[in-house]
Image 1 (cartoon, helix red, strand yellow):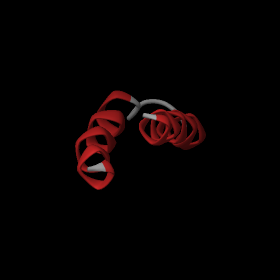
Image 2 (cartoon, one colour):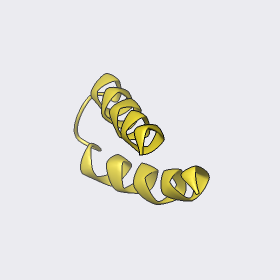
Image 3 (tube, helix red, strand yellow):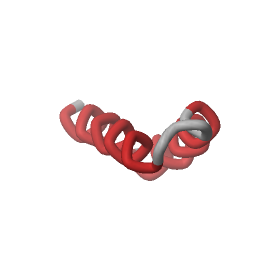
Image 4 (spheres, one colour):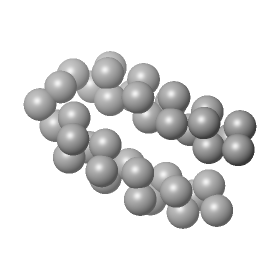
Length: 39
């Protein structure tokens, strides 16, 4: 289930943060992963 969420959210974040720095992309992705694990 979590891997399924990663496959969906990662490309969405990549498209949304394409113009932003890689650090912000990783931090946003880590926060989303923590939320998925908490659920």
